[in-house]
Image 1: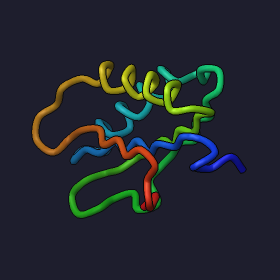
Image 2: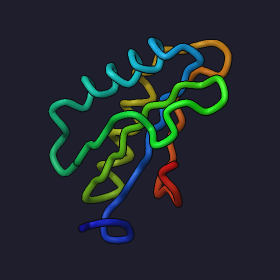
Image 3: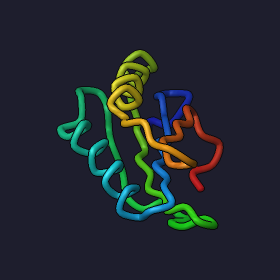
Length: 100
């Protein structure tokens, strides 16, 4: 199945107090990663807990053959992110212990 430690894994969580903003940010990231760079697999959709308190959440799971490729992709994801106010944003967890 090529999970860590045999590959590199990252959970990218998009969250916003407005569902439209969270969906727009996750769509922008999806477009950035489509088609997926060579050696990278992208899975995405609503987070397992789609709304937590006042935040709507979407997640992308990135699986890469090596850390170098994953770090390059995560760098481009975080640099393309627009700055937003409040608690809106992007949370990147490399080698996550849980996907909730």
